[in-house]
Image 1: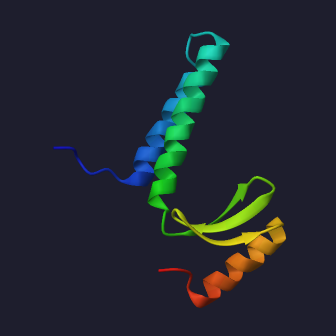
Image 2 (image 1 turned 90 degrees about the horizontal axis):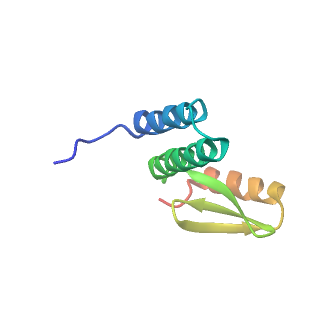
Length: 95
């Protein structure tokens, strides 16, 4: 049985591991690879924890407003995406 972890604590542990990788006694390429892998894991954990929050994500030359994996709006500029996000937050987003 696996223990339930607090996502923010779990992500913080991976961030600490990433920073420790930078200080390790290894070659620069190895330290950078380990740092990038640990930070990617921390970002993934944080993203899963905030899956219910509305987010603006870049895609190609466009911006999209998402909630978890659901795309709620597309915009050609970041400013337009912010306006769409504000409008969705006003009406409560997709629940």
